[in-house]
Amino acid sequence: MKTRLGLLVLAVGLFGCGLRAADPAVRPATKLAERVLASAATQPAEARYTAFPVSLRVGPDEVWLIYKAGKTHATDAGAALEVVRHRLASGKTELIQRLPAPPPKLYQMGEITRLLDGTIAIYVDVQEVGWDAKHYRAGAEVFRWNEARQAFDAPMPFDLVGGVRYGYPLEFIHEASTTWQLTMKFGYMQGGRWGVDVLRSDDAGRSWSAVRELTAEFGGIQANESGFVRYGDGFIVTTRGYDRIARLHRTDGQFRVQRQIDLTGKTSFVHGIVGRPRLFVRDGHGYLLGRNWTKPPSSSKGASAGPMQLCLIRFDLETLVPDACVILDNAENHNVTDGYYAVAEFAGTGAETRLHVFTYRGLGGEPPAILRLDYRWSDVK
Image 1 (cartoon, rainbow, N blue to C red):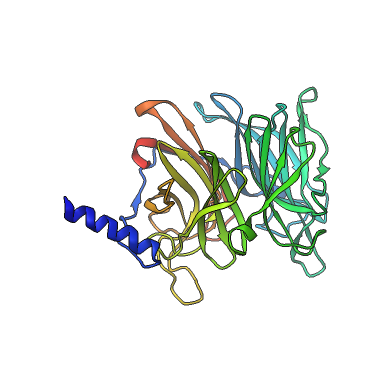
Image 2 (cartoon, rainbow, N blue to C red):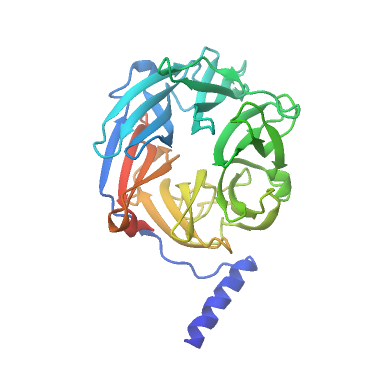
């Protein structure tokens, strides 16, 4: 017993010193079911490229999903967001509303949330196609649900916050009378700065104030897509670095950093970024969900050796050290060419608890489909 304890202490010590320690084996998940919710076969021609689903639980059995419906991954002026109602028990899905962008704009990502006054709102990553055929952020916009009309009203620009125009809303946390928003700013937009910030609203999203410039707080890292979750009196944040390093950060209640670690290259299963990372806390552990590559790079340039996969990475909430990785999709190493921004919903209790993952996946360069993947939580946790 003393020998085993000593090896465990040594492994944790090596990880903290930046050396590679022994890591658990990566294991594939047993999938209970896979459902296609939208695909090129079911969509009109201008909306055949379906991607980037985000969910909002509105009832015990009802989830609203929002996803991009366009022509390509990016630079497809006029691309829309589609909002659908999905039933967990039956799998039935019905369109609520399609929200097309007026060209040259396109709606790339939408983050759907219920504000503290009860209003369902969609905060949109709005892009424009420039003179060079590349895409640029055009400033976030907000759709609000009109209960009387049973439809979303016309979008409104997201107001400047401290002289900064924000471009890519990432995630929301609601607690008591406060909403925190994780969002991105871009150097070519008003305010002239790059980074990931936390904003705060105490009036159900009608006004916002800046709380912390997180990328500066985390040591001046360069990061883009990020996620966060409440933990204790503070928060845990995950960042996707432009330097291809995935990180975890624990903060206090004012988003001042307390502990942070690099994930990339420190385990046998994280070798680059974790795409569009999402966090949740359950059963005493932290979980990181997102696009991942479990094989090491094939060259010093960071090119991945194998196909992308959808992974659920478990980590310790205090040390942030990951201790397990489950491949939720593509353990078979198929040629997935686009995919795996994902969100999770739970249903059932006890041994009957199910994990429902909503994601997207495209094979061999074909337009991706919106998928629901089901698992027994006891098999993957």
